[in-house]
Amino acid sequence: MSVAPPDIDLNEAVRLIDEVDAILLDVREDDEWSAGHAPGAVHMRLADLDPAALTGAKPVVAVCRSGNRSRTAAMKLADAGISVYNLAGGMTAWDGSGRAVVRDDGTAGTVI
Image (cartoon, rainbow, N blue to C red; front, side):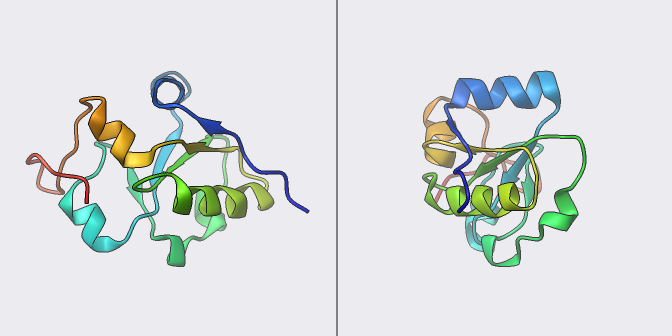
């Protein structure tokens, strides 16, 4: 039986991204990603999640809209031996804190 990866809050997620160069992995659907995502995030839909694409020394912070799908993704990544955390509150928390949300063209985005 797997041990659930830790949920972390927004401040800890930002610290890991800024200080440890963690990968922010957005596992939402394509329409959600297109509407708006965190700058610098990597997009891989939960249905397409491939742990082999994320192996390496960098930790991963998984994110979705609220933290539920990303928890599933984090479990799968942890089972593959990847150092991973789940962003509690997801993109809703990210956006609610006033952090940037962008579209692929760099314009302001929204969380759906």
